[in-house]
Image (cartoon, rainbow, N blue to C red):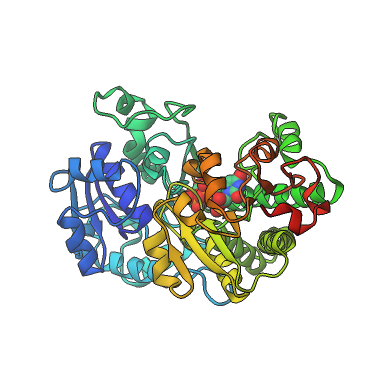
Length: 469
Ligand code: UDX
């Protein structure tokens, strides 16, 4: 298949590289000239496992980069729109980039073309894309509009694309559906997985993946509803964690108990400092706005967002209750990215917490394996950056864990304790067992579990003096 992908951001670049990997001829189009030039030169603008290999493998062969949308449309049978849909001040998605791409496509269509929404968009977008293309002079028989949402997670985007739980294809006409089925055939038939140089299969990936064919509107809804549901699951467990703190029970035991019900499942039940990233916060807000516009007041989503914000506030209260006054305190912060395995700090709860602590007069030394450069662009004063967790901990009044990086779950605890001025750890991601931390000499606070103290006395009952060495 000849495919154009419009937008070389996270979704566009990964989709373009993966379509080439499936054997298609792909042009990735972007109007950002320096970005296209960098991609042509072999640069990889995002931190994503296997992406450098795929770009290297296909660049200049099955994968091209261009700024010329008109030509790309003429050369392609399917156009995937993967441009940004940032939130407006009212919380809904700004679709002006989608509209301008639709207008340009209209002027270029010369043979039957399938126009596919790949960006996360509100449920009525396909109707609008169709209207805009018609308004701008395209023949109604020369195109169809489909929706093919992606469910890529940052850090595992390439394997999420090539080994998906499911492929959702929303189209209202058989001819358009046939094009999409053909594009994904290497995955749905399983033939891709037999090739010798296929990207390695992650654990528990269902191969071949099922393809779910729906109406265009249903596919648009599936994407928003999936992200909103996952965000709701996180807020739900965060609310349960707060209750656990009030009654003195342990949220990890509660999670095990509810997560082993196969109807609920254990995934996305990790309490913490709340969800962040470029998708959940934006999509929950946009879904809320879409529902309102369509006449349904989706108040549940309001609560999902409120619990998420509250979770950061609760963490700050925990820091205050562990350290009393904050002005002038030296804190070590582990983690700045919105989750482990990425350098992305968009809507990162870690960044919001660091900013709040700085406002209260704390001095911070932070360490993150990938996100420090990006953080320096948004926070500069009163934050020092360290080269390791131990360097960050050196001389600190307490250590805060804000991102669930794997390396933070495997620290040398003795070394850490020796570095800290006071052995106090406030863990916003529940990476450690409270009992183990207490045995190792730490006063340890986490989310939804009782605080632990070296000599077994609940931390809340210990005077601050006796916790110092
Ligand atoms: C998400 C969706 O998972 C993906 O399907 C969609 O395409 C884009 O949005 P992503 O934003 O990359 O992907 O991150 P994800 O791994 O889902 O985590 C989102 C946030 O939730 C992170 O801040 C993470 O720390 C937090 N989280 C996740 C929790 O707090 N608890 C959990 O149990 C899981």
